[in-house]
Amino acid sequence: MIEQDADVVVVGGGPAGLAAAVSAKQHGANRVIVLDRNQWLGGILPQCIHDGFGVEEFGISMTGPEYAERYIEMAQSQRILCFAETMVLRFNKALEIIAVNKKGMYKLKTKAMILATGCREKTRWQSMIPGSRPSGIYTAGVAQGLINLYNIMPGKKIVILGSGDVGLIIARRLKFEGAHVMGVVELLPYASGLPRNIVQCLDDFDIPLYLNHTVTSIAGKERLEKVTIQQVDDTMAPIPATEMQIACDTLLLSLGLIPENELAKTTGVEIDDYTGGPIVDERLETTIPGVFACGNCLQVYDTVDMLSFDAKKTGKHAAEHSFKKQSIKQDRKKGLTVHAGDGVRYVVPQRIFTCGTVHFTLRADTPRGISILRLTVGKKELLKKKLLGVNPVSMIRIDAHIPTEILTNNKQVEVTISDT
Image 1 (cartoon, helix red, strand yellow):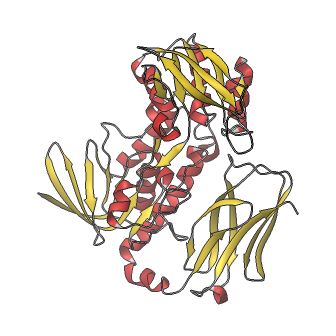
Image 2 (cartoon, rainbow, N blue to C red):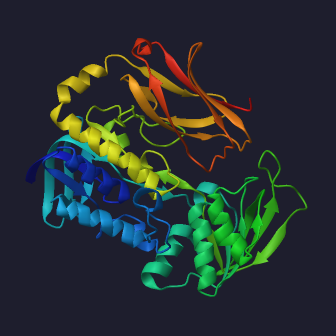
Image 3 (tube, helix red, strand yellow):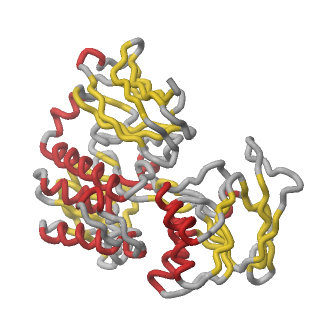
């Protein structure tokens, strides 16, 4: 057993993990270690060769590999220890981490820990699509990796189920490579990807988008031969006599992302039923003291820039915890719970223990026009903000002041979105 000590250990070397590690180092953590199970750092970014990364954060448009390389260089310049091909097996509430790689077993004792384990794609079996089991069915992320990393085309005549951003971007990428993209099929009455990607990836390339539709059957013996799509009603049930068959050899699934938190669950970190990520406070600390969370394992972000902004805050708070442990523990004796009210799907953070300005991220439950966002505690209104329009695909970010006098255990902050 190889034993090591650290001020901060980050589990996950993707963009969130690297941003958090760099920030922890910049805010006073002396020994910072990053653990990642892949052979490379950067997470999914090396296969994201399209541009648009870094515009909000650095003011320039970069590809995914360029964005990742910037943070890798920052980590190297600050002498952050990065262990690739290292699998974290478990950790405990005493912040002792057991990991393994080619050199053997590691036991790392740390003062603070950051979970940056990312997310995974939903598969065919989570959407329960009936039919045969031919080859030619991939998740959108797997198809993206095949093309951009290994120069392998997944197919020639392609249908994409789900209009998430990865699916939209891969539709354009396939078009570039000469594939015939037959259409993108979306269950909801609106696209689930960012509006700019609808325009740049579908409209600009004349790729049809079938809203209020889903794939109801898959057919093929050895290789996929056709899919059946069908219109759905308000309850998401297929409408009879609306079937349409599309001949194709490939079906790509862009059904959404699931935060990867199996490691956190085994240690007892409380998980939010809606986000699938850890329940955190305003410092992005989980229900286990000293364990923080950031990136797509906390909540699925719209852009890597916004993800990195929040990951940097996590790194700062983790560093502070590593050398102010006792004073921070005292703040947890009183606090508020945060409730997603009418018009809101979820809110992060879910708990508040300190007064002052708190940064919230949330999503609306349905598309709306001009709306009013409110934060209230009982009859007291903490914030009222007019929104020109809301859409579940776009994360809402707000700051609100939490006064000292309302920090009691029996009070609740409610966040609502209404038409007036």
